[in-house]
Amino acid sequence: MNAQPLPEPQDRPARLTVGVVGAGRVGPALAASLRLAGHRPVAASGVSDASVRRAAALLPEVPVVPPSEVLARAELVLLTVPDDALPELVGGLAETGAVRPGQLLVHTSGRYGVSVLEPALRAGALPLALHPVMTFTGTSVDVQRLAGCSFGVTAPEELRLAAEALVIEMGGEPEWIAEESRPLYHAALAIGANHLTTLVAQSLELLRASGVEAPDRMLGPLLGAALDNALRSGDAALTGPVARGDAGTVAAHVAELRRHAPHAVAGYLAMARTTADRALAHGLLKPELAEDLLGVLSDVTDARGRGGSEA
Image 1 (cartoon, rainbow, N blue to C red):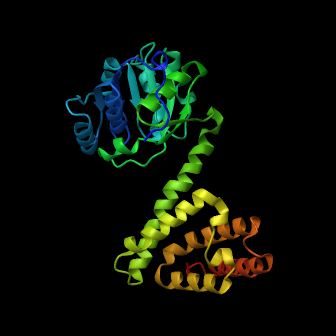
Image 2: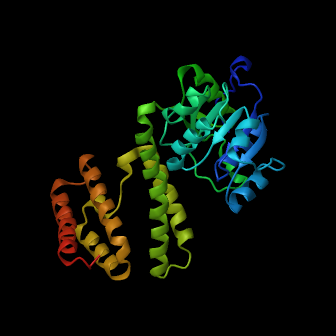
Image 3: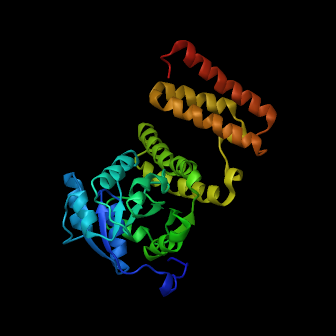
């Protein structure tokens, strides 16, 4: 449950009509959460059949209309489109006069702060950047997962209370991110979440190839413990052959991956080198063992560079 108390009544935004531009996985879930807090979703826009289905499932009876019509109907507009599409969307809405003075425009991009909303600001809109630190499925489970979810919040100082109040009403925990820090903040989340999914999926694939019938059941307890230890202890939680300096084991791993899963070699080498650097810097890996280990990784890299086809 969200341990942070709700804002005092004078600091809470009035009940607002809510619109969603971009009915992907994020927007309908946030609008549904705002509905639970007493706000009223009134319009959504979506192009694909999947977007229309998501809007219908999470926002029943809310009409799907063009983006300009969403802005015409809503006092609070959620701009939940891909990062690369956001600047053009904002510029287009401002140029066509769709933005109204006093209208709250909220984007959910992790990469951008409020500067990307500058065209709308010039038209009189109130800009907020509220990025939910969560992966979304596009189903009702996302609304439940917002409870206790952190949001990266960036807003003008005069709108800070309104931004934080909206986050808290959705069950989230606001975390203030400076405008200039947004790209680094987002890169950190991508490393932790997106790369984790890639690593787990690859591990599942390799376990199946090795004959394990239920790789998910095997990995679940291990990865749960590893994640918990890492969150508690950081680099001190490092274990395994790289952190121990078992150069022979690492070499055997690479040889097997070359034979059975050459597409996995590059990722293994990159993570092994990074892990070795961190283990060495934190005193977990003995320097004399690190030399042998890095030698193995260097030899592998050189062999790939000369042969070109081994990995």
